[in-house]
Length: 251
Image (cartoon, rainbow, N blue to C red; front, top):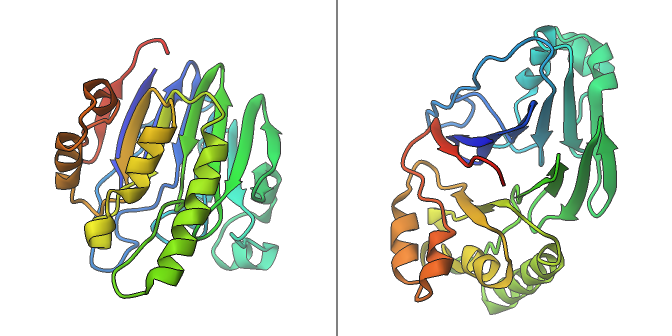
């Protein structure tokens, strides 16, 4: 199997014959940024699963629904805060029948989507986080689940955020995880590593990809230097560029 870091929080995982795509959006959707991640082409009958953790434009792009024109075996797993009414789809030139291929998910539920096992968790921001079992490979994509502590908001709010995040991570950590995708947002300043650090120390995930880094990957190496446990540091994947490919063989 292999993982492709597309951009921001968007990753593609090839597991056997399945393709899983998380939180993809076109590169010009976020004002002030230009992202360059591209989804490879696949055979028309490839089983493709497109996940969107919530409706924020750096995690969801309605144009992914147009991919159904090219892929007959495509499935969408969207957080229920994503609105695609028939009238909305018609207005944007998308066949309303595409809704038949969409599974709308709520936090803290379990779903089966064409043989794929999906479990959702609450987020500390919007939508859901995804835990997915694909042919025995387990993936956890946090979406916007993070310890969003910030300068200037006060200890009361920051304390509540930290408690909520840790409560959810403790639940997630009870599950086996081969690959995890966890925010490490540089905009948080001195709090940038807090969410990642708690996840690393409280999860047995084999490999952990930092994400939501707004094209600034310098924090990954900096964070790894401060981990005294060498084996723990090796679990953190160092991302250097968009469209970077990470082969894993058999997990």
